[in-house]
Image (cartoon, rainbow, N blue to C red):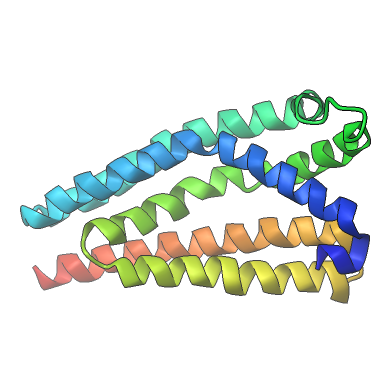
Length: 190
């Protein structure tokens, strides 16, 4: 999609920006991995009420980290982009990468509910549910929103960025609601 609306530079901006996003979410990935183990132990010990506590606490901790990371990314996007575009050949990409980071930082606070919900499902042995959430988010919501914003509404490269953000946000909200529904069903069956 990016090649079609903006050319190869747009792909370079996206690739560099995604690498930076991966750095930003490393702490959330660490929490996510811990949630899998802790949720598995609680589920295996039949302490189903603790799953909701694990979910809630991990989301709160992740939210604090994500908000801080989002604010730092928003405030220092130009400086962060310039670190990764220091050569003469890539310096012209710095403003675009900074703009990409500004758009993407809006979905950081939505990541913890989605990530921790997927981890809960992995921990309780419902890996296919976690996989379905990821497919729904990345292959359905992100692609549909990127296409709508980029092509249908005609916003081009910026529209694709906002489409990715909107798709990720919706996917994380769906994951959170799915997990809360699972907790209610689990509680009703015990």
